[in-house]
Length: 240
View (cartoon, rainbow, N blue to C red):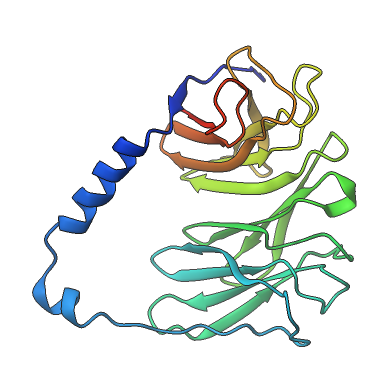
């Protein structure tokens, strides 16, 4: 059953963020790891490298995999996009991910997420409304595709995975008649195909251009959705 819960806003306060950043900066690290970190530089594997390919625009990591999006790749059309998988232990290139129906201006790779062997890639301009694709990281094979049901909503501009749940942002969606108010969608991945479980919106306070869903995060049953324009606060909100 699809429901539309309202999320409560969490004001983005500079003092809170500063305190968190300071706490993390002062957190003790093992001496060897802190002074001698291992750094591996990953390179794009696009076949036609060019300015504004945007390799590294989006990144994700799991125990076994690294996933890097390059939504400006032109290999399959102007700004069709691509994503690249690497071995998390060695940094070696493993696979180039592209959708079965790739076309120009899809911006595939604008968002990426990983959980176990599932790789998810967003293409927010696919067919005008956006799409999200699931891949088996071991084989690079496309498993499924989720499509927008609203033209121009930017479906897939942000994606997040946690266990068997997928959260997709659509920051340009019309919410309660408000263009660009934004929505976010929760999918259940426990079955053979993703199933829409919930549609998330602001707490009965839709506003044109609010861009709810421009950033998303998941951990267990907690969903955090960014709304960088808001309507009562020019600084924006994050909704939990």
